[in-house]
Image (cartoon, rainbow, N blue to C red; front, side, top):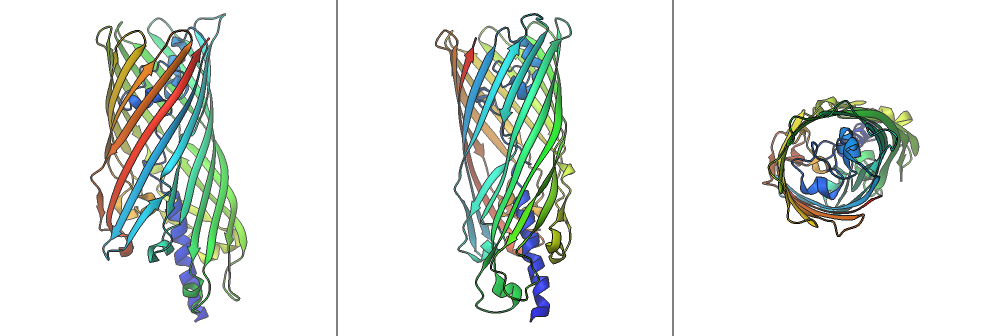
Amino acid sequence: MKSKAPQKTKLFIAFSLVLTLANGDGFRNPPAGANAQARFGGNIANTPDASAVTRNPANLIDFDENATMATLTFGYSKMDFTNVAGQKLSSEEPWAILPGLFMVIPTAEDENLAFGLGITSPYGRSTSLSDDTSLAYLAPYYTQLSSVEITPAFSTRVNEKISLGLSLNILYSELDLRQKYPWSLAAGVPGLPDGSTLFDGKGTGIGATAAVTIKATERQRIALTVRSPIQVDYSGELEVTNIPPGAPAAPVSDFETEMTFPLVIALAYSLQVNERWLIETNLDWAQQSAFDQLEIDAGVNTPLLPSDTIPMNWDDNFTLGISACYTLNPEWELRAGYIYLESPVPSSTMLPTAAEQDQGVIAIGAGYSPGGNHHFDFAYSVGLFSGRTVSDNPNPVLNGDYDFEAHLLTVNYGYHF
């Protein structure tokens, strides 16, 4: 019996790592700020608030006074999975909060130079699954990929029509996974209590964003932004609990892996139709194919894995959208947008904690300036899903129907001085 234990142990640890690291919409969170949320499909050529630091640093030069902004996004995301055998698995703890903080400082001495600083969470997702079904042994009951990015930026005006921007993207990320482990099955001894595999890793990476905004005419703007890929090397520990005597596992081992967050190129066009209407469209491309495989080093527990390289085979993906702003009066601006998001995750590698599909997003919002230096923004967006059926997953237990629900509510406060 014990001679079979290593093979069974390998199976469960391998699935743990795959399920943790595959997250929705690539790894990208929605853009920070209520203006960006309400104008989901077009907010790069025109970014009138301090979120320009991360959306398009070339637009920092448009500010003629200091500006700060704090923002909170409340996200609700739900996934229901029913496999071909009728077993069901649903995500729990669906709420998440994404904060953001920005500052823009134009230089008093040189009107052709401005600086900015942003603190955001550009990547990540937290997923909690039910642990009272047999599917819980093939999927973690808790996973979290979180990030904090510090973004210093500057912008300069080349001439009346062209401005340039550059930012440094300093990314800190944490990876956390907790999963039930069936020692009775792995060791071949009925009655053994379940254990847990606890993966915990942290890492830092550095990238940059370059941007250019061109004022083609008094009413038309064209913008291009290029965000470099960022490689994060995670290091930490793998803890295995309730190990029975003789099992080929160590209670604690080193855990290392790496992930490359994608190169993203975005092109934007905006038209100021008249004094009240502004329309913008954005197209971006993300090199998600950089996540073609996952290399794993579990220290002394590495021999338990069937392979230290797991294929992911993600695809490059596009997003395309359009937005409109209407100035109702000097105090109120109304906004709306639509964006189509193409999923980079193929069905052959899609799993419950990697579940996603192509989707549309509709957003609405408003900005309120009561006078003085204060400004308030609000936005709501909802994902449009039709569900996804998977039939070619290598593990037949994970073939079935995936259904989704997602909502975002964003509020922020800005102050100019």
